Amino acid sequence: MLRLLPAALAAAALALPAAADEFTDTVEGALEAYREGDLTAARQDLDYATKLLASMKAESLAKFLPAALPGWTRTDEGGEEAGGMMAMLGGGTATSATYTNDDGTEMTINLVANSPMVSGIAGMIGGLGAMGGGKPMRIQRTEFAENDGELQGVVDGKVLISVSGDATVADKTAYLEAMDFKGLASF
Picture: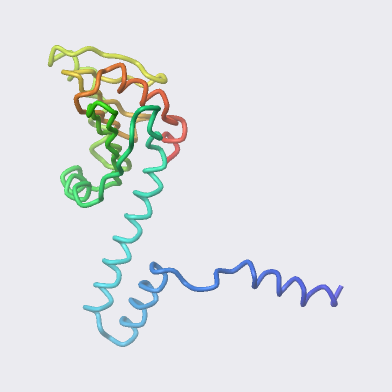
């Protein structure tokens, strides 16, 4: 048994990452600055580490955006606009993608998760559709409001999905049907 221990330790060492990533380097830099009494540098590093985590979270949310359907192309949007939107919504994670078909028709799907405002919006979805002359619809057992071709719904009270653009409601619905709402519910 003692002869197996060195082999087990070697295997465990190979399973560890070869080098730290940017997030851990930044957090370690913050700790080092803190220990040296440089609170300004520690705060800057922690703020940057928070931004890195938000970016990683947005990347994981983007995996729920559907692939482009036949005849369409997908362009992932940057996080700059999402950051401003998230500040207005009280924080959270956001991502989006724009889909364009061969004739130039396009739509954008926006996802907003883990925002305190989303649960409040969920209760208003049906009412907004009715007030604006729109109509309610269900996709994958989630209620959406369709108003002037724009669709909004909230999955499991946690993730707001908005679909806008000049594509038809049928095209927008096809994209929503291609999404993993069960996965979004556990995000």
